[in-house]
Image 1 (tube, rainbow, N blue to C red):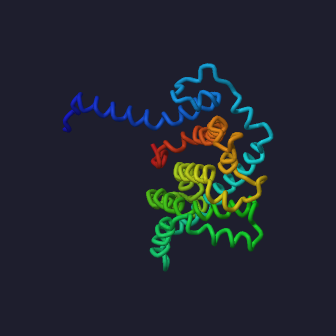
Image 2: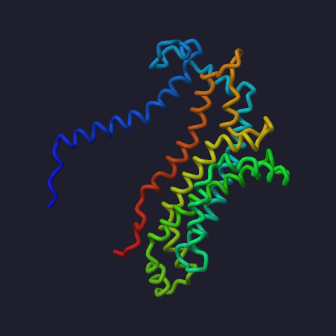
Image 3: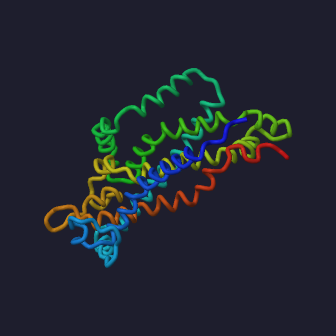
Length: 279
């Protein structure tokens, strides 16, 4: 029988957790708070902790012919395409690596780890030349293809762990009950892998939605910018950063990620093998 945790230890752990929570949430609060302040309050030496007396001027400037709608459409197209295609290929690759034994399997798994160690900046020149040769610069297809390649190693590795954690006995039991191999997979394995697919989908969504440097290199046309690149164009009359507009734009850019997470978070926290055992 384990000893109960001392009360002082519990309090100390709770305080540390609260401090960590505040440290993570404060930058988000400061971003939202700054988005409602005018330029005078933002540049004042004393910080303004509450947006009292603020307004929506920063948000109005975002929609004043700045190309926000076009950048939003570009980011949505690239992100959705990246997530869908990456999940399909990663899911098939994870099944192959986890369920089958073939020559080169171990080398393939090691290659996934090695690829993730290569700095993305070291590939920019070759990636740009490749897309330029194929005439895919400043296109949704070209940028989506690069994002898919960047996301695949991690998604394959993550899904491999989910697939390996599911006992193959479940499929075999379903086949004994009369299901075909495909039927056992669709009725038993695939539903149990939903949390893994959602988790990797969230990762792919965030990575593609927030990526900046690769989009800056590939999307040179001002009308083909994604949201992070578009956000970097806000400067004031003195060519300084317009922090009010940047913070307002950052707030708007964060909303789709939060909404997407809220829609799928129930699947992320659900049990991996919920319902796998008959009552």
